[in-house]
Image 1 (tube, rainbow, N blue to C red):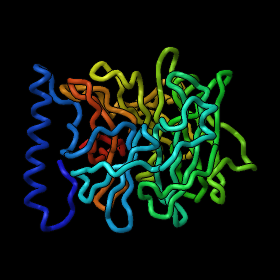
Image 2 (cartoon, rainbow, N blue to C red):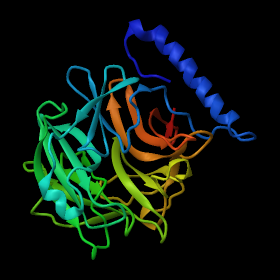
Image 3 (cartoon, rainbow, N blue to C red):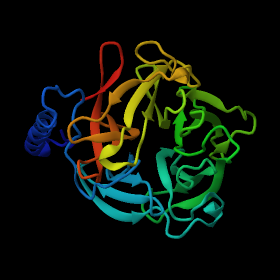
Length: 331
């Protein structure tokens, strides 16, 4: 599976598609007696050790892939297959974030292009703590080193019942801006955003609840994607960041309204632990999650990380398809 779209690239695309099919077959072979439940990751190459990836396509066709750590790691690609490390989003430490345990270890960026500029929401926290904050940076190009920090957007403390990390900006069908976030504690939350500032709308300070799981169940990494008249809420269940022992899986629910309720394919509310599994551990792919969705010219893509048998982090990219009932699956 590959993602080049030009006529000249079709022979190479077919070859890489064969490689992807072989890779999927290898997954089944590595798990004797079981069919492959999910399509294997598409073929990617180069520097692909990206965690919590968010990808955008610039006006010149270049892809920028942003990921956790090192002042937000940046990789570039011209074909969605070969990736090169290209520095970091920020050029210096973020001093205001020291109150949250770090000035350089920036997590889970969410990058989009809105209103003539690139917006990056990002997380700062020490691992396992909900003394956390979400910040905002802006850029006119989206390139490494071009970002101007706009400071704190939202935060949580050790006395909060939620965790302000893993942000995702979504604009609804009426043009209103919203920010989803959350990890562990009481689950996934949402606030309304003022488009003029990129920060919380003063006229609506409600913190909506979108998804939770019974303790000690974990839910994090929300991403809302619009397709076919639905809002799809993707999230990651269970444990990340344990290499090949990770139990992360990607789930989805959907709603006709941005604030929910989000129900899974069986009709269970995600606020009661619902979530239809889209991707999970199989064969040599361990703990796929930390996902985002990119709508590209040739369709929707699920962008995520997973771990190899050796515990190394890897970038995963799959096409998203939708079944007759409108539910997304990996293709």
